[in-house]
Image (tube, rainbow, N blue to C red; front, side, top):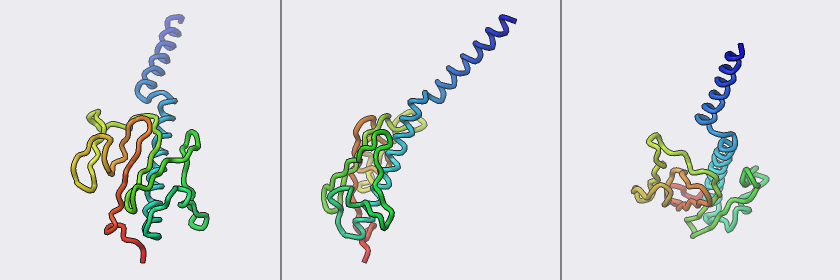
Length: 157
């Protein structure tokens, strides 16, 4: 009976260790989820910047200009510390949005980071660089530079 109890405890311990190895620790999963929310937030901000540009034919000087109670737009904040995301107007047609990521973005099936292709030149620009339309990122602060195609995103008349 005593050996059966030890065997059962060993099986439970092995199961717990194996599940943490496969799934990852709860802290890492929280970090991954926070990074997913950051990416989603940056995509919302990018969409709002495009809508603003289409309506006003220029980019705002700061993200606060996008907040609008009438349209029910409130620019999201970082899910962990509530800080604002970084935004910089580069030119009349380009901007940069940044976030602080906890983890490196998930690799593809080969274990390598997903490549980013520039939508403007159609060439490979590296795993984290350029004006890519894939939202891969390293750990730490990372900025996405975007250029508005004024022919594709024609301003409203």
